[in-house]
Length: 148
Image (spheres, rainbow, N blue to C red):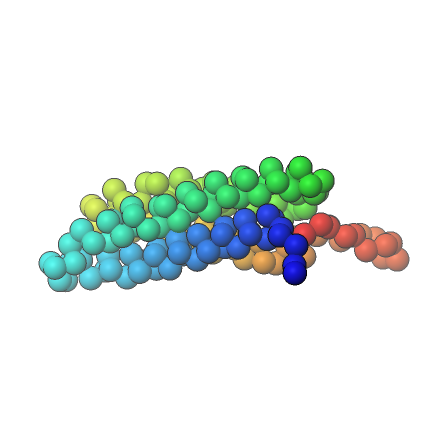
């Protein structure tokens, strides 16, 4: 029987919360385009954003902080990973934009919602492609290994 690993469980829940938030953000932005043309959709985009996207991002952010604490307790130092310094500001800005987006969507402005979606996609790109953010060493030097 496989051993229970809290890191894998938290990472999976973190990923699921991000998937829910990104899917809801796309749906809310699509619905916001229909609100002006069809009055039956009025108010649906801000409500969807406030209930699904905002909570998905909140849960993902909290789990990200918990993952950092669990990793630090396990002896993994994410501060040595250069992708961490790109992902953390993107995640914080996405959280801030997601908190501002429902009011903006209610008034017909989509800028904060679109920026939150783009920041989430950029943060996920950085997380998946961590190897692209390594420092390049001198020719002939031993390759750098970063913990995952």
